[in-house]
Image (cartoon, rainbow, N blue to C red; front, side, top):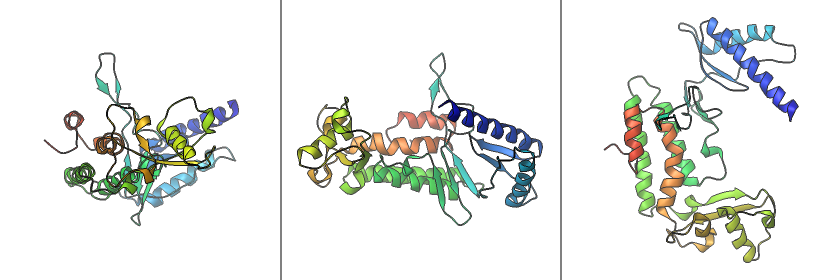
Length: 283
């Protein structure tokens, strides 16, 4: 563990020192973490070519076994806002870091979207949550990066989210889009908590399925009075079409995956306004 921490710390040191050199050479550092740095190229030069040349020069000064690797040039990038925290007076404030660590989306030169750290690449989010997040990212990366279209792209993204929320509440979205999948990290009898995926796994076992560590558990959350989410999970084949808890999916699957992204483009006033609303539509 100490060796791993030392390696991470040394890597971070190399990146920080590289960032200082980068800025002294006229580049702008727009994001960095423990093993990567994103630069904005100098005006009047092709970003990819000038960065490649710079990387080669930096590598000459690095220890023999450590090299920076040029990965690519991206026409647009989105770095998610850090999570909100509160100051001593209870006011919201955001981290001074440029973007949440390891959470960004990039638009490649051939139109693909590369995602790091967002929910759309994680298994334990429903397909509907992943779909709406990917749609929002594409709109903001493709349209929001065009000068003069930032506000329009933000409004378009909000409309997409609100349309999906309406479809969920009116049960237009099929059950297959609501399935949440989680891998059991231990044998079922070793769990001492009542988590949703644990309760779903118990239902599987009760129905004769073999359930063990590493098993993929799938479930849907259904409405049922004031009971906790853990007691409202059902296996996909147990839920009639449209029988999911729409408000759960809106508040705990859809809104959480888009609010942080949209806030990157919003003013502080817009953030406060949207925080008070149950949907993202402009009031």
